[in-house]
Length: 320
Image (cartoon, rainbow, N blue to C red; front, side, top):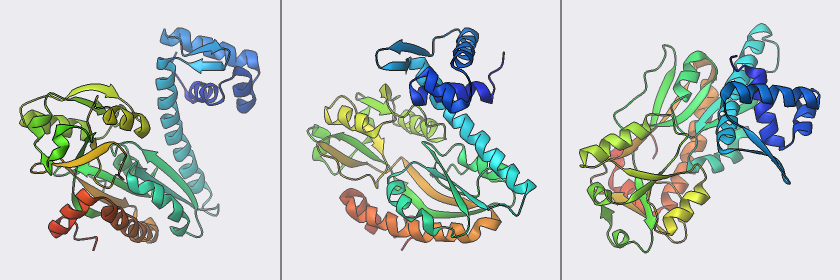
């Protein structure tokens, strides 16, 4: 048995509602039908996805991972269905499909999304990494994409797409406990971090993880990753306690008990890239203007990055 969209929607509904009966109502099915489908899926996979408890139906660790991936897959399917529906009926309400890599600027960008297009219905997709966004633009599933790529590792674009580098080089910062001896210096050498435990994002499917590990290998070590988390509050707690260190985008805001430091020589850096389909150029240029204002505010709020920014005007010719 291959998992299909109806299986994924069932898994996502059970995870979201925490109840078989509520999931059944959401899906327009009977409770026995959902229970039977869930048993068949678990039997096919050979793992238990959910357990019953006094709090309801809770996902197992494997179930939580499957539900997360199901949501991502369903988002792609829904995007595709919406795009095909508009092609079948061009007179329908137009949509603007925006894909953004999760970044500190995103929370402030959210306040301005209504400015991108007055006539189109906005669909926003947020990915932890930039790996899928170029492919979705090329396939027609997205109209505009804003993402990051490792410096020197540009993603090939499909013919017809347009691209603008907003920030040519954005140095990565290392986040550490404010009590760490490493926080005493203005920068820290990458090799000095060899004996520390790292925290990483398990959902980043872009080029960054391989790029990061290659840079560490060039410094003479492989990073010792002992913690994996997508939640920044959990990550911050681990780092404040001194248990781990992690890589942060330089526009990350200050956090109590943490210190951000540049890595000597800036061996880890990313570009910020805007890509769009020609028919969405007006929306892309509006996004560029909004992003510029938001980004520059974040630069000034982060002292370490603000100093680097002023010293390296060549790194951001498109943002003045």
